[in-house]
Image (cartoon, rainbow, N blue to C red; front, side, top):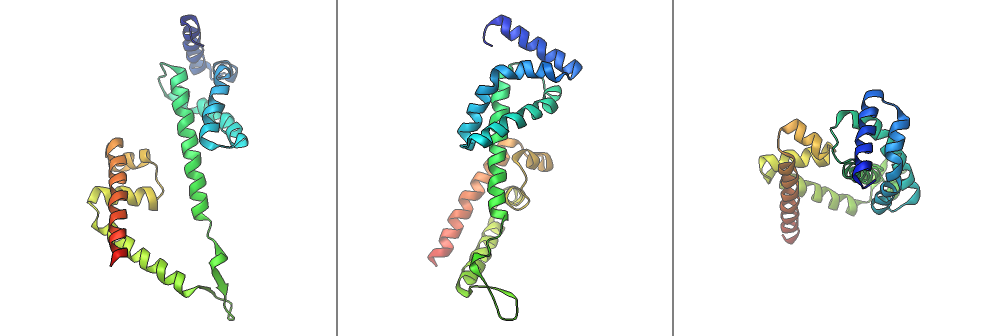
Length: 191
């Protein structure tokens, strides 16, 4: 849909969907862009099955989000929605990997209790202490954003909502905090 008639038809479909919540209307609106959405999802997720699942999930998101948003250019808005959906999926996958504890470095002691290999545990403990000390040295805003993002697993938008920092500021605080933490941790290794 690129010419003026198609854009007008698209706006009409959007208005009708908002009024009626008719999924057939939404389907007519979404159908011409499904291959583009699939392409975006495949680019980010790098898996055909995940991309196909995302195309369906994005349609379901449209049912909820379209009535709440004023959309001038559906194609552009859909692209951003698709990209954000994929980025959130990638973030969930990353979280799941870190949330699944790996027992391969543990050994069962004779009394039935789990024990870390001593040297691994000592290194992890040292790194954790150093990281805690480095976080304590961050500026107040950076510290707050890092704790919310990494420890509480909040999104940028959730951090913005809970702190009243602007979205750009939240991203900046996290980026600067990461750089500062990396430098602090590297200095600790040199000692």
